[in-house]
Length: 220
Image (tube, rainbow, N blue to C red):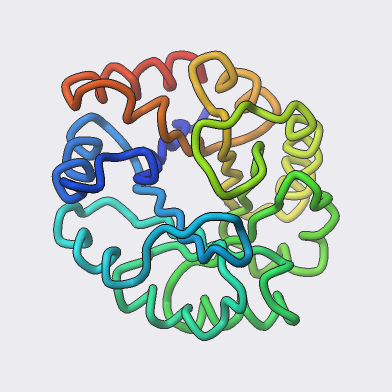
């Protein structure tokens, strides 16, 4: 079985020393850095922009997994790519032409992702799965960290696993929201290959990050 990818979400990190926090999870065994970008419009919170992404790019060699929860999304794709994004993930609802948006992401040289909110069905990926390098299942409503896992994400993950397998392509199936040592095993059993974790990784002092990541891997 392939190694489960662990992508700590910096939304739960200490923003007063963000570069150090990114380096700490790299040293602790993370595979990617998950960066949540929120605009206070598409989701009810505001986080960061390309300037912050660029400022922490020099702190790690890990891939930047940038989740854009903004609308309209198209005008900002190149900016986040220039800032250092390796994967750029968007929501079908964040623009009028998600197929074109994924094409635009790929044209920058980044890998393209599509994110499904709890109320967005798995079937939303059917017309665009050939352009997707990553599918992100939100197992909470986006906007805030620390929420509880929504159980209906599990059958959605199972559906998406079948769709991905049918393509024969190596598409990352990522899950974000309420992921911890208790839910990780169920998420992986349903077919996920990557876990986004905020408080489950960044809880406690940096000395605990390696143990936190190890617990997720053991559970998975």
